[in-house]
Image (cartoon, rainbow, N blue to C red; front, side, top):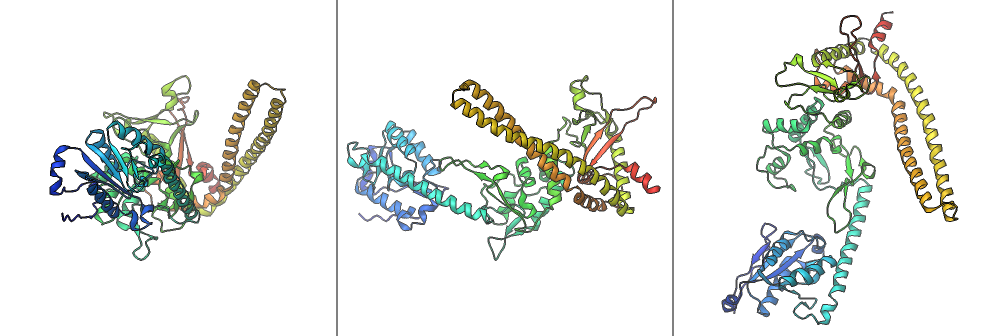
Length: 572
């Protein structure tokens, strides 16, 4: 017999590979339709050990063993590049499907570590699943064969599986330690270059701007600044036939972790959200975005922002810090979509001056533009809780543009005057706010320290028998809840003090923003979102017989600007 066998490896696309039977095996083949499954697995870590664990070598050993022991109807199941700690491998899952369909007589592996590095799962499959379906399991190098349950080698299989698992744990710890050290010093941990960037041709670790994709990224941020939601942005990109990130990268010959999409111009809302929230676009490297619970649980969970590491200025920025921060504010507003699909540039920006709740944008498909209006959400839910702060959208637009136009004019023509007057006003406001916040902060910190002492006292009283366990548990929970609330308040107060201390610096940033709109002739969504933080509408005043209504505009970075007072003072 002179049989030549090919050991070329077919990757994940075809994990099941059948070995042609020699002529003299045909009679034995007719005796059973069940297959002999030859299973091979190689992980990235195993590949570092050299040829001994290579898929080619495993296949050679398995086929030789199967031929010598007269096993027939041989089929290979291969997982190349998969960890033994996880059974969600394509080759293994296809083999398991065959087992559960009672089409497998025997499974042969090179050794137990090729089958699994999870001792509990390995035992479950070998002793229960395979046994239930009458499947014989053989690990060649470990002399393990379920056909002989009394074998001493079989008795040691559990210990060997434990050592295989220990090896996986130890390897995982080492890899995590290396990754942690790299991440702490600012080395990028991601291997996938974000859409909008590409690897530097001479330095694979460096990113450069991909101008074609970067234009789309900037467009997405611009549309968000104009008040468009992720689904609206996705719909517009699809309408304009813009290739989605996966299709774009594949067209450019770059590898992606995703399959080729059926519709190359189909954008998903989640893709837009991911782009809008990705800090890499301001030139920052962000490490430790996700984490997994253990080597068994491969699910990646979002890491809290305080556990992430951010390194700024590591590559060219596509989006400015100002625009990125503003977009995050807009994203938090979560605009409510109307049933008609119509939207307003003011959505998410308008609030009731009394109850401080949002004013809902109301429209129907039968309304003309002048009929659209905003109404207090509290009043709409319960008329007794708040009066009807109703305002037409066109009226609101006129009031806001008039105020913004005045601010732009003052800054343009009397910049130093505006800087001086607003600086003095902000200084007074900040000093008063800081004084109040610091006083409350001191009170909160004092109470937290007092609660620590009370915790210790009731613990000692409980230990000495002066305080019952039930009473201790109740008081301990009360103190703990109060302390948790106080700590959250302290953090908020510290952040507010920091904001107040930065107001003077923010004034200069605001002035530079306003100067960009010196020649603005009408209200635009982008200008509105960049300059305005909130609009507070008062209830209409009808005491004079005419309907009069005021709106107070809170500008981003500087708060409320008393335009009338500034103009009067300037004339004097």
